Amino acid sequence: MVKRSIAFVVLAFMICVISLTMPVYAQTTTVAILPSSVTISAPGETVTVDLNITDVTNLYGYEIKIWYLNSIVNATAVTRPSGHFLEPTIDPNNFYSPKWEIKNDYNTTHGRIWIAYTLLAPESARSGSGILAKITFKGLSEGSTPVILNNYPGAQGPVKLSNNQAQPIPHVAQDGSVTVIPEFSTIAITMFLLSSLAVAVAIKLFRFRKPKMPAK
Image: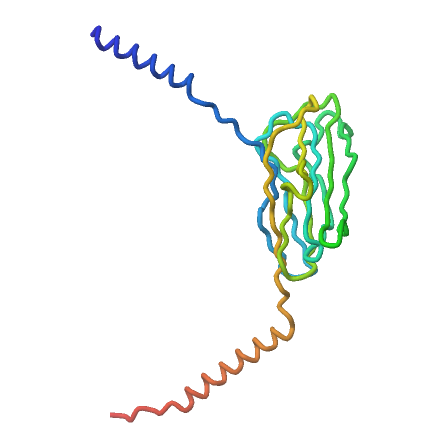
């Protein structure tokens, strides 16, 4: 009995030591375009993606720049949806947004979205995960473009997060992509219908000419 008691004490001590010495891995705050890959069915059509944040602690404000190929898509809207992650809860006017713009002609190759937003006192900082904004893209021509959040074109990185003490929040950023597929043209539809008709006629002719087996 004494031996069992000693063994139990030793085991409990070992578990305690292991739990104290094991490293604690903090969750990484991530800013991402979701879904990460989307398709626009034809030039002229649109798609909407989420600008999402995950596993953040005490977020109070952000500044984010996003780039895309302006020959493939244009951004048509950037909105903060109802219930977005930094929506004020005390007073709907308890926020400040010094920048909220779309420049589809940022340069000869890229468009740029630039948004900045912060809560104002007495609002509290937010922790957890949610949507910061929704972005709508319109397809212009066939092709694919990255939706760039990560280190383009400056060394500082285009995503900045801060807490309610105006301190930066470490994070990672994940890019997305938008693909515009070619429109199924009227000529293509006509050729498909003609081909289908030709196949149907050929089948009927084959059945008509097929010799009948003599009766036994």
